[in-house]
Image 1: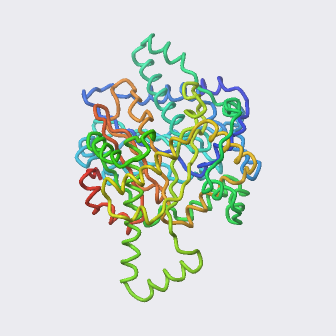
Image 2: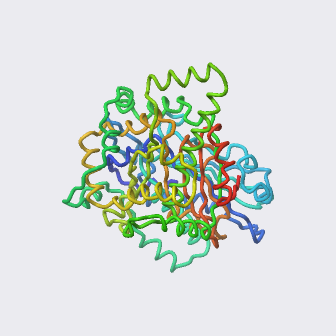
Length: 493
């Protein structure tokens, strides 16, 4: 660690409005490594620790602290004399790697205390928000190692997160093998933390934002304004008590690429716009959108048949907030592609949500290739429209209203049928090799926030898509029993 401190240069990084969009959430993942060769020198702790600080020297922002200037403006301060060092923990467990494998890595089999953060970004015991938490757990009889890493969305998205973990693995391998070629390749990697890259890359052309997105970000909300005014520490404390993860259930499914592609072809037969690009993940997002809408409808029907009190509660809710006639679908897209900077090593938060309102009358219809095509077209049009001019218009809206970053969160909380879908299949989940091979399984924490859907890549040698779904428990019951879904997907846990 002392070597790391000697490399630090004092500097400040004013965060971009994009960094605030999911600032209250962490990016937490677990990496499960088997000691396949039963090596005594398997991922040694001292080398892991030393290479971690060498990687940190390339990501000094993760040793900074947040300085809030109010209403959405935040700066990361990296001060050599006042570093906010990441939490780095090491422990051992009496769990064998084979026991994790037998349980298909279900969280009930994990070592106690493996995850050291939850979904919401909160201050640590010293009163500061850590910009990285790491927990290295060596399993019984050295049968494997599990590494938990968490970073807040204030400073990275999935691209920055997995770039750090991959770099850490490369530096560990270099230290263990003295591989000069890998050392040179690692030295040549470029990581850009300067948020001005986004501003410099914006096109001059602008494209009108869709009405739904504008309404979400510009509609006045006293609660949203209050949350934006709070400091990151206080806001995290408030949100952690809001119980976003209460009564929620997460399930992980595997969707075979071949089956999904077959479904995509059937759906495309019913797509009239021949120029519209329909990706397999678009079909998957549309299918989940339909399933969730159908599940909510069944829950409402069950509530109505449950008795007078449930009926009265539902009537009061509709009288106060109005009956929901649409599902707010939020698809996260990476601005790096729209701004043509995907190859420039930008490590800041590059995700923006594209919001649209999907009519429940479309989503609640029984699922077949034709009705799924209608929902898929909505998704595909959103992604096809996410180009540079649209990104520029979105950023203009954020810059004009720095405090608007809390409005989508409040909006989603008031609309329980809303969904947030993120496609992480292109992220480097299985690229971090510390010298003994790639992880056998990578996953997030057991229960994230409700109504959050993540598409992840499968382990190496498979092109299947892993789908993590987190919903309220009554809604999830209808998902796991959905016949169309059960024919397509296999539950992992």
